[in-house]
Image (cartoon, rainbow, N blue to C red; front, side, top):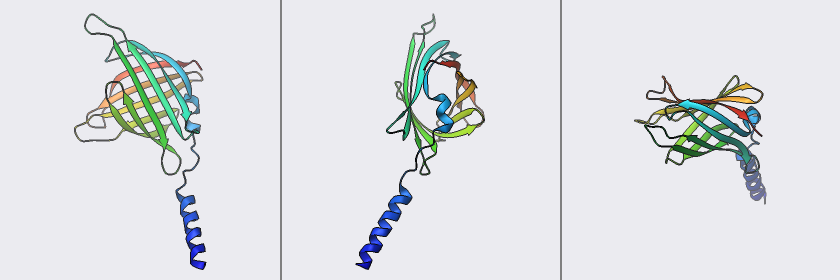
Length: 168
């Protein structure tokens, strides 16, 4: 009987220790909702929309994005769609993300926070560029989004950057 009670106590203790804590989305609140923006970069001048919405009882945050770059004399129209899932680490802090797009890319990100910015930097993998995606709050209803690429993980070059306004 004593051994049975000890086993139950250990089971309850281990379950509590490994149970996922409630996720703290406080640093993301300003970014949640629907956004519309315009930007410029390597693909050209474009426009698009993105959204950040909690899902799975607020255990994850889902970002969906759609961008369009019109055709020019030198290149065809580009349509870019992607999906990102932001998720917590073992402590419950949102610190990781995984990204998928219609071009077949998958990127794993680690998340950091600086001032009014959320910075996602891809994992370093041999012979693969390092990517950095930064959302910076400009004012109450405006955000700057910058996507950068680096060959060495230190010196980044802007690939695309734009400003967006919150619409919802």
